[in-house]
Amino acid sequence: MSSTPLAPAAAPVPGARALFFIQVFSTLGFAVLQSTLVLYATKHLGFSDRLATALMGVFGAFNYGLHLFGGYLGGRFLSNRNLFVGGMLLQVLGCAAIAGGTAALMYWGLALFLTGSGLNVTCINMMLTQRFAPEDERRESAFLWNYAGMNVGFFIGFTVAGQFQLSQDYATLFTFATAGNLLAVLLAALFWPQIRDLDTPLLAATPRAWRRRFAAGAAILIGLVPALWLMLQAPDWAGLIVKAIGVLVFLGLLLLTLRHPVLEERRRMAAYLILSLGSLAFWSLYQMAFSGLQLFYDRNVDPMIGRVQIAPQWVQNINTVVIVIGGPLLAWLFTRLRARGWAIDVPRQFAAAVLLMGLSFVVLPLGIGLADPATGRSAFAWIGLCYVLQSVGELLISPVGYAMIGRLAPRQYQGVMMGAWMLATGLASLFANDFSGSIPQAPGNDPRLTNGFYSVLFGRLGWGTVGVGVVMLLLIPRLRRLIEGRA
Image (cartoon, rainbow, N blue to C red; front, top):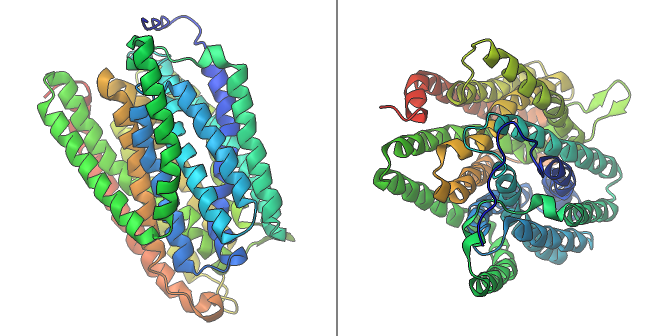
């Protein structure tokens, strides 16, 4: 079986619009779980802050870390299309189990959900990137639009989660997440021919080899569920395992880069590794939004704007609104600026994103210093400013990071390097848990007793990340040469 040739640059892109809408609904369940897990564990199940944030850490680590595995399975053992649908079905079962409301069902639900989300997210990115030739400039715009679609899903998920959070009706909330995941499966079935793989090793397999690989891929998909359930019982040890895997993957990619025979491709792979380290700094702070930063908002920030109480999940919608509006706007703006000769490239965008992330944490100690002395709670405006700065940075680094894989990664490594890129976000989730777990839990969670610890932590993290951003600025000329394949 031969692969279907890519469409020329001037032709329409079949499947891109379908993937946009599939992305919206596939995100709903993840948005609900990501924004609610720590609050659900502490308020409904009675978990300690440390255990709840540890679970959140491994939730992110497994979700993003398994993207590496999904990048390898997709297109080799199962088509990206089949793996995506199989993963979504596991997410449906996972959310349904968590809706049962017990700790035991939560652990099994998380194991099912994380197996699905961990393996299938890389698939949707690979299905999209296959639809463009490496030099096709529409790739970046397509990923920006798809990223906006993902954040439409986040907006809906966060909004519904916040509404049910106010009444703590978690059973209904997780039932809603189940329905959202099921809609993504139905949309994939509706657009089935449009989202087929176009250029993967599996397309060249004989029918007999295809069946063997399909059986092996399905067995792996199912077998991961009990393995993740077991590791969720000891989140601290699971975190250490994922960190060790991250180090090994980085060393493996470094060795692969040094041994790669094509000089220009080797230089681009080196640029990829440097940018990966910069992204790790960015995402380590970003992932705190769902653990330590969320608990800080819940306990140390005034949630009232006028007479309206802002649920913790609704704060996340600052991010989604900026992304949904800013994604298409940024795609349009970049196209116009580049047409006028402006040098807007990946190294400059990465440096700006890391600097913005650092500044987003630098402003928080200012708000804490101006907190209400009677309650110790900071004004909502400071956390709002923090999220706006993070969101602009995310627009610069995340969709562009996905899109650049098609340019920097040799064809045979694209799936693995896409997965490794997401693994960095998984490691960042563990580092975010380490940062979040360093805050002592005061009696009654009195913000006047914890503000000092938060102020020091946020200041150190913010200024440290600003320093990383400055280093990225200094590396811009070198990174440009590597990306262009020059010495």
